[in-house]
Image (cartoon, rainbow, N blue to C red; front, side, top):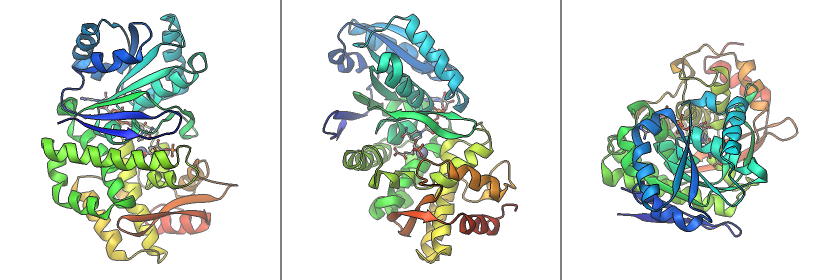
Length: 370
Ligand SMILES: NC(=O)c1ccc[n+]([C@@H]2O[C@H](COP(=O)([O-])OP(=O)(O)OC[C@H]3O[C@@H](n4cnc5c(N)ncnc54)[C@H](O)[C@@H]3O)[C@@H](O)[C@H]2O)c1
Ligand SMILES: O=C(O)C(=O)C[C@@H](O)[C@H](O)[C@H](O)COP(=O)(O)O
Ligand SMILES: [Zn+2]
């Protein structure tokens, strides 16, 4: 079954199409967006080796000439160097501003290609074909595009919405278990941040989602995308409610920066630990019940994801170093920290002006070094 979730933005609305077999339909679905029948497809080496031939066949079948631009896999590609290389290769293809670029991969390819599309000749359209669970439920939707710098995560980027998102559930069959779990961290985020019923459903059905049982997987992806689409349509540029999608990210991004954006800690793993920490931080400040924090932690741990600093390679972390990264967080205002904190499971809020000392003391209690 194919589900279509509209992202109802006033100026640039688009659809997220979710279901099996969508890579095979990509030519027919993308052709109406093209002025001339050619496109650059940006992908990483792993995705291209596994699924590139299928996408090429589908696009060529609709008469579209395909120019693959294949980049190395991994977070390190989401960098100034990766961006410069990609832009140079797109320029070499002599794409013009009426052309459309296709991002075919996980969140790294999507964020990098989206940012390149935002600045290539001052902006061209792009289509997302996300191939990881994380990219299908989160990064391909909403138009946040960025690269990392050694000073922090996603610090250089732009809001640039795709024209279309095709989330083919079949491509997830080749995704390694660890990447499934990392994506699941962003799925559970939607339950924790704003839908207790979905959280309870995940407590019961999470294992089926991770096992890629088709109905459970389709529901998890569709519900996640519905929630993201609703929030983004209300607050595209993160002036208010969209910040809730950052649950677990203030702590998580600091951990990613400290571990050097490598295989030691995937984004989803960092967000998993970050969410458990955010719930415990909320409980420690008397904002939510300790039993809710414990239940959130159990649900995250049940998916084989880290919930404690001690489970992350690189521990013991330095509390002051983690807080220094948080000051660079894009939610910080006037040098003061902003966190997404919890009132209960399924109810979170934006807490501005959180005192750095309070965060440092809490991290020490969590096992970080002074
Ligand atoms: N823009 C947003 O709103 C947003 C949201 C969440 C995360 N992100 C970003 O997304 C990135 C993480 O994305 P990710 O978790 O998809 O990582 P990723 O893009 O690095 O993909 C993970 C790994 O899986 C491989 N892979 C991808 N699809 C595959 C498939 N179908 N079969 C086999 N292997 C496959 C890739 O080659 C890579 O090695 C981070 O940079 C994060 O900051 C952005
Ligand atoms: O779409 C959003 O908004 C999010 O915050 C989704 C996050 O999962 C994602 O990791 C995002 O890239 C983080 O945004 P940032 O603004 O903190 O870099
Ligand atoms: Zn994220």
